[in-house]
Amino acid sequence: MLKALALAAGLAVFAGPAFAGAQGDPSDKGENCDGGTLQIIECMERQRQYWDGKLTAAYQQALKDAEPAQRDLLRAAERAWIKYRDANCDYYAAGEGSISRVNAAWCMRDMTEKRAKELAESPYPN
Image (cartoon, rainbow, N blue to C red; front, side):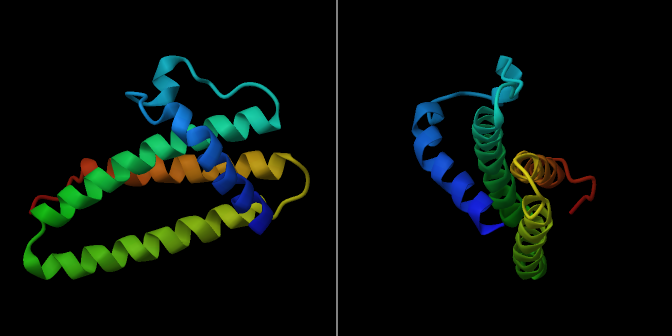
């Protein structure tokens, strides 16, 4: 579990600068994350980083748009969601074999994308 997260964090350090200037979702640029385990994990990490940026922007906008009484609740919800996402993806990382690392990377990318979209496209009016 921790090894997979350490690997993902290490990949973020090395893969991040190469894509720091990229515009748009890497998967929209034909990046379909094929290849060996390491290439797939690196690709998923780039996509997760993209969605993490979108999530941060959506969260900041949601805080700005929220009523004062909602802000502390949104902060608490976001902290709880991060703990849930991390624990959920740790479950996949704890599996056997290299596929567990791929599954964990996919989990982080997928859950981050969904949360970013949830906050950006909230169906609930203020």
